[in-house]
Image 1 (cartoon, helix red, strand yellow):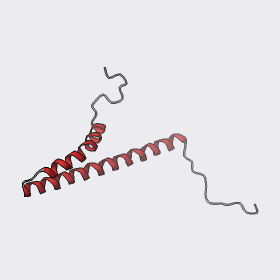
Image 2 (cartoon, rainbow, N blue to C red; image 1 turned 90 degrees about the horizontal axis):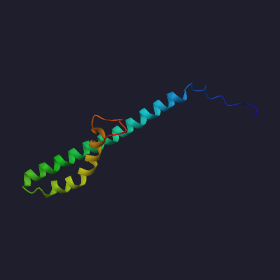
Image 3 (cartoon, helix red, strand yellow; image 1 turned 90 degrees about the vertical axis):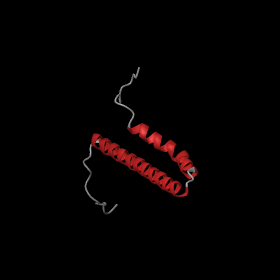
Image 4 (cartoon, rainbow, N blue to C red; image 1 turned 45 degrees about the horizontal axis):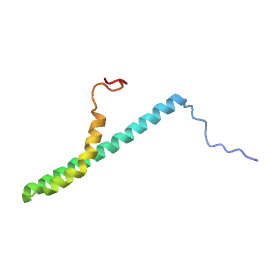
Length: 91
């Protein structure tokens, strides 16, 4: 090649710094997804409860709860799993 491309200089990121940044980004993404699901679920439950309170029919609330209960429980169980986190033997 007659001319070498010169885009910029090399990043001085060590493999450990890269792993830390990647793990931070993964955890941030998981947290945003979890919060979005939780907030959306709570809003759906509130809307169904208000609708049921106005009409006197709570079947809609039961249907919404049947849909959102599993994801909400899974997310809450993941974030609030107890004080023995990281212990390999939970006997």
